[in-house]
Amino acid sequence: MSGPREDLRVRLIADLERALAQRDAAGLRRVRRTVHSPAGAHVDVDGQRRVSFASNDYLGLANHPRVVAAAVAAAHRWGVGAAASHLISGHSAAHAALEAELADWVRPCAGARALAFSSGYLANLAILTALAGRGDAVFADRLNHACLNDGAVLARADLIRYSHCDVAQLRERLAASPARTKVIATDAVFSMDGDLAPLPELVALADEFDAWLVVDDAHGFGVLGDRGHPGRGALAHCGVESERIVYMGTLGKAAGVAGAFVAAHPAVIATLEQTARSYVYTTAAPPLLAEALRESLRVIRDDRARHAHLAALIARFRTRMQALPWPLGASTTPIQPVVVGDNATAVDLSQALWQRGFWVPAVRPPTVPAGTARLRISVSAAHSPEDIDALTAAFAELSTAVPHAR
Image 1 (cartoon, rainbow, N blue to C red):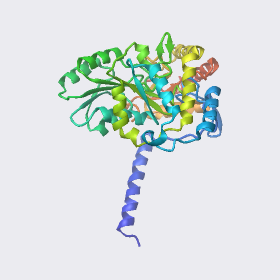
Image 2: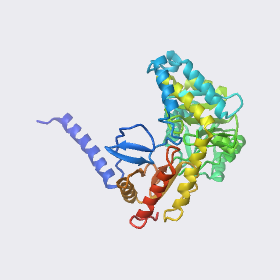
Image 3: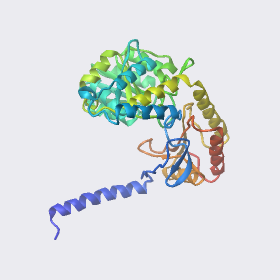
Image 4: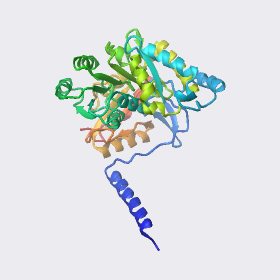
């Protein structure tokens, strides 16, 4: 005989099952695939060999022999865990060396320090909650990654969004805000479109309105840079430097390992160390990862041919897609979206590519705005020109069979 408690359990589960069914009907159910080989251009996934355009391993460092060797050697020296948070006993000499090297490499301002985090999500939560609070305002690009918005909400600041890369609208909203502390938050490279934020203009607005500028360079660090320093990231690419900049770089994408870091004026870093809950109350990442990242950073700094190869592959992809009916965005980064609009069409196209030997994920709302479902192609330095040619040939074959208008 069922009682009220059992009835409640059944109802709660039934509510979840109805919501899942609605997600299925809208073409929004996400399905994990299981990989059985190291990350790379060619992977074994769900028992099949596929050419992968699905990862963020932009420089092909996730399985680089030097990085792997550094991790193995560090495991023998340091073991496999940090065993405590950074402020208790988990901060090793490996972490300290990595932070110093990262701060020197990205240099958002003179004398900058860096702070290592276990993930970019935790880093952005730390930044927003440390710099903003009740009565303050965070001004966020509408296409920002979710963790920037979540950080503003967690800080209990006013979250004021502005149209994508619309500097004029942002200026109006900054001018209208009475908040004592203003924080402009933006992706540097937008993760689903691959375009760049107007960083010089944003620095100018931060100066004009006495605001912080938080730059999430998850997809620019290691890839973008200036002529003399490829890989230094979006700040170097755009030629900007300021004590107002709080820079977040992810270490699990182009750097090929895991984690993230914040680089900024020493006062900002000291504030994060003392007050950011997602730093203070999180076990430090294993020192072996820090040592692997130090080797990864050496490859990023020194292997110019790897950067040149990636740039050539991106140009090759864009040139060969020009003749096809899908419009290409303005991205010259490894993120190359093919926007098809309809959720089901995106899934069908992804599946058709899978059947032809390519792993290209369909990205649908809420990750992207409604009506802009797409295939997100990630080009990696691990790919060959032949991989690019084969993928674009498959797109050409499908161009008459799958709808392509937004």
